[in-house]
Length: 157
Length: 157
DNA sequence: ATTGCGTTTAGAACGATTCTAATTACAGTT
DNA sequence: AACTGTAATTAGAATCGTTCTAAACGCAAT
Image (cartoon, rainbow over all chains, first blue to last red):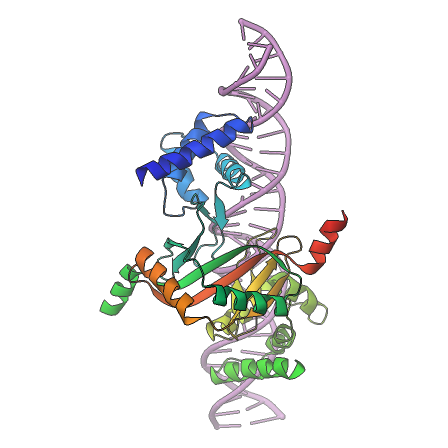
């Protein structure tokens, strides 16, 4: 786990270096926080935590850095609606789905189960019938429901 | 097709009546536009078209009406990111997925292919391993890529 | 040490949505 | 058909998340 985060961090730093982008202390701090964060934080979340060590940090810097990572394919941006309309940022580049809790908004990564060929061929057919000529680049799946903790709370009340 | 839209409209009107909500001319106009619109319009889209017949229509009215429908389960709200961050509204209550064009932002409904039991059991297992105790209410799937028209344009340039 | 250009900063601007307080008008009652 | 309670509409302000701006700054190549 810890090593996985470290690898993420190193891939991110390497990418900035390769692209001749500057390794500013602000950027490195953002990367360090972000690559170890499984909670799919908002820009606000990161900003708030960064301000404790960089009192002058600006929102633009957070967004700029996250944009650079997304452009490099080292992170992605999730728009899942719900209470807050804020984007959630995801440093996990392995193929995965998301389980989103209706009550608390928590997001959990779900590794993809390699699909049965029969199922995927049926899906491909449905897609081609409804949207002929559409070329798929990526498929996203979101499970909506209640996480274990919120389900428990709901049963009590 | 036409009858399908009419049925949607009637379900919407019936629901408002049952809930003792008032059938104002503004609401009826919104329903008429919306239930026949396959383009997954934004609130802006609807507002702009409604203003031609209701020059005094307010945004709040559009949002209020769409909220009422969503609450009744007669429509849903899509947050798909992309260029504009505006929500897209969907009057189709049949189970379906969405194909979203990266270039033009168009959204196409894809009816669900009934999944192979083997595949869905594998998915359930992956979900339960990664998010134990999560109770699923709904599953959303989004295909990202290029629609036929945008793919064609891209090949030419 | 110098210097060029990418970065950061604070704050303004922006787009989408929600809220507010005052006005209007539906629909049930007489 | 007039009356009335209450929900709905309106214009505009407020809010939230995000992007832009122009000036100051500082990394890294020389």
